[in-house]
Length: 371
Ligand SMILES: Cc1cc2nc3c(=O)[nH]c(=O)nc-3n(C[C@H](O)[C@H](O)[C@H](O)COP(=O)(O)OP(=O)(O)OC[C@H]3O[C@@H](n4cnc5c(N)ncnc54)[C@H](O)[C@@H]3O)c2cc1C
Ligand code: SF4
Ligand code: SF4
Image (cartoon, rainbow, N blue to C red; front, top):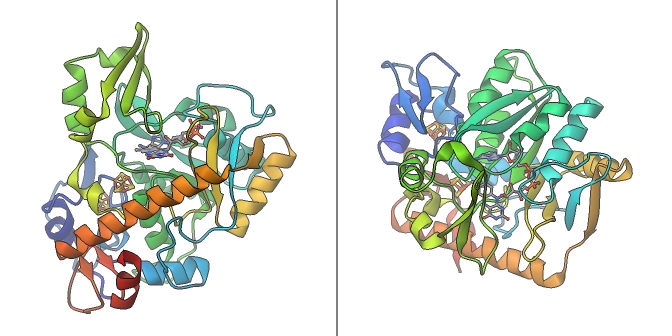
């Protein structure tokens, strides 16, 4: 596939408001930076081919190609993506307790992988007030500092680029689905770097229906709450329809109808709810705030989950049938809705070599998925 450069990235993604601020183009060079939730090019660059364009999760994402590379099969639109097992889980007693978003599965897995030396650094998302802050962690005891969801889009992958520059080569990343797509593109070495070796050792993906635009959320919430007092934000699963904001003074609830207005339009084109290009994906579990849903996709993921369970870092159980059915329904809805909208808006490239778009998918697969 033809690779383009920073000017096409600006034209196709940033200027069209498709940028989700994932950080994949940040720190690859001196030009792209993220500031308070926005990605900008500081100085003009004349490269005609760049890793910035090639890694972006909003440029020519070839689902078939990525699926064949990582899972050895064409992209078939399975609502949950290619996967082995789907279970429920929580952090085990060996990991201990802490402030987690739900069951603490993600923190337990990252801590376990660092402890065992399966990864040499972890790319996580910390916060400063409500600003999400990418963080590179090498001490398992520091994983907990980054626990809990920051519901704004985060330039987390800028820390991955920094980790690679610093020479880490078995890096673990906790990523939203769009960040996971960027990592998958990067690992496929699209710019054909001669001495390329895959620097990523483990991807733990998060489920995601949408994220908030940082600047919009900051303006909205600052009028209502002292952001320095926020200790945790939570969005309980349906039918709650609220965002809970915990502060040192107590809890406030905001109707989700008001919050959804702060979601950037680019999330409405996003086809992936469960981080399909990861080793292990983790989300919440309806009706059980102390547990997670966990999807294992790769042998690497399965080995780590099995060992973490055996050593008491993770507790696993079967997923109730109705939870699994609802998860598949929700993921399928998101995928179809996004594909239909992307097709209507001309953002799908059905294999015209000279066209640049958001997604690349063959017409037959597209027809089957949206049918
Ligand atoms: C923007 C967003 C939207 C989400 N939407 C859904 C949803 O629709 N349905 C669902 O089931 N689950 C959703 N989740 C996932 C859910 O909130 C929990 O993260 C997941 O269940 C793991 O819980 P845990 O207790 O294991 O996490 P913890 O052990 O508390 O760890 C949370 C991890 O998330 C990472 N993280 C936090 N914020 C971000 C961010 N903005 N970008 C990248 N990484 C981050 C941290 O580095 C930390 O490692 C969403 C998460 C985010 C960040
Ligand atoms: S790589 Fe990420 S931050 Fe950069 S333009 Fe694309 S979506 Fe935005
Ligand atoms: S909905 Fe998609 S694009 Fe938006 S933050 Fe989530 S994964 Fe990224």
